[in-house]
Amino acid sequence: MSYATEIAGTTMSSLGRYTDEGVPVEVMLLDLQLVRLASLATDLNYLLHTSLKGQTRRDNLSSFLSAYYQRFSQVLGAGGCAVPFSLQDLTPETAIKDEPYEVLKTALLSRLESSITTRLQELLLKEELGNEKPSDLLRRMKKLFVDKSGETWRPPLQCPNSVRARSRRRVSRRRSRTTREATLASSPSRSRNAPRKETTTRRLLSELTLIFQRKTGCYFTSYIVKCDPRRIKVLQDFTYIGFQKELVFYQQLVHELQLQLQDAGQTPLKVPRCFYTSFEENREVIFLEDLGPKGFKMSDRKVGVDAAHTKLILEELAGLHAASYLLKAKIPDLNKKYPILNLDWLTYADNARRSTQGLFSDVMDTASKLLHHIGGYEGAVAWLDKNKLRAAELIENELRSVPPFDVLCHGDCWINNVLFRYADEGVPVEVMLLDLQLVRLASLATDLNYLLHTSLKGQTRRDNLSSFLSAYYQRFSQVLAAGGSAVPFSLQDLTQEYKNHLTYGLITGLLAVVFGLRGEEGLNDSDGKADLQDKRKDHLIRAMTNQPNIRDKLVFLIDEMIENGIIT
Image (cartoon, rainbow, N blue to C red; front, side, top):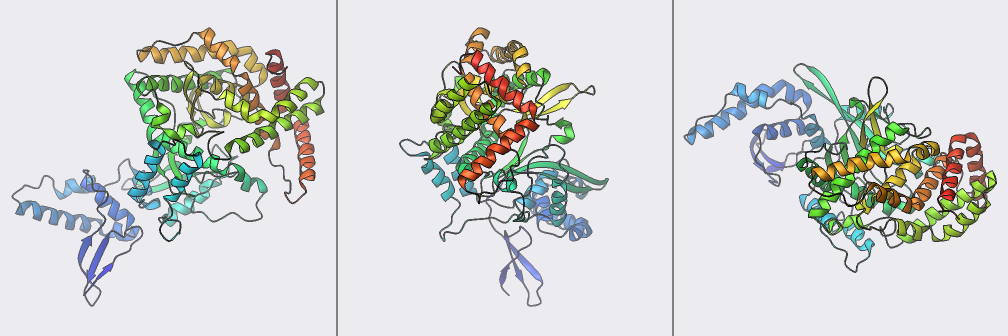
């Protein structure tokens, strides 16, 4: 007789010894890396739901529990200890209660090497760059996922067939973010004949439904799964760092921020609950709460948000900013504790400045051509043509942290990254902030300008600016006062800081306009560069003609910047 490895689904943590007839007679337990104090039912559920066929589990559950209980009682009896529960007590303890996610997690992401995960977290949370380049940190992070043979380490992503099939069907019926491509990391590759947009703006986001059964019937729950953050090739490193930022936010930062609000007796930040994160390169994944069943919806970005929606967002941003202000009072060097916050548009890689310059220079050049076509904006065209050469410098100036306005900013708070819940009358009553991939330490005015210049009609912004800033200031002051901290600036100071960063509002507003017009260009990169640029220009002009609301948004934005002396 000899020992052989028993492999069943995700279970490779035991060895069985067999008779010559193949009957198992002895077992050895391996890999005690996750020992913990917890209910014995967690071990039973883990084993029975990862290593058995469903029919085997169902047909033999009573005998399985009886065998376990008999051995448990035998050991306690031999040790002179009374058994603290009956077999009847054990049975409901092993039933799935309100934790269907645990079953899904163990089936989808069986085991990650703890040493790799721990080291990567240390890099993200504790490593200081010193005189090294940002790419050195990135290279060390990626190196963790390469074994001695040079092969990429990939733990198996195993998913029950019924869940995988159900999840793929759900992709085509997403309730909210229907404009974004969604698929599981384990789903088949897309067709080579797919539209070009699918390969250049890929953002893998799925609504995954888990079906589970209780004695009272069949139930389901759902999760939002984000994976593979890379989209546009030129920004591959940027989106990779952005995904790592979001991992750090959900693993560490959000808990520290929530603690500040809890201690101050304030409502917690409105962000989705995070259930699980994985660092594996090219298969990064975040399991988030699905807000759809709670009634949260996305607004139409082509229409923009009105004053009521905007005030909800601003009040939530104020809570985020104020909580970070309280946290910074306890941890002044927040960027040293979380060095990944230092990686941004100009520092995420060795070529970051060049890539960022190219991106925003192209946006400003496109806006210049659109204004030239509209006519009557010769001064603005000249300003854009001149300043597009220093686009990276403009971004750098705007993102500098200057007390007392430097806080932890969302970084990407616009209409596509918020969800709303409504009363029966259609009035927005609650907001959720999404996509914390660009969190950074910067002036709070960058978040305000970003939101107001990317997500609102110009007239809405102009008519309500004072009330918007007042609503933000009121909530910011409320949180700081509850946390025992004095408000470091007045409403007038806030208004002036907002105006000081109007250039950031201009640049990000132009970004929203240009990308809103581009949509699905359907252009062929095999064309010559000059031909491609001419076709793109013609496409954008036609798109602007067909979408007068975006044309009006551009014109109002430029007029506003001229009035405030930004464009001269």
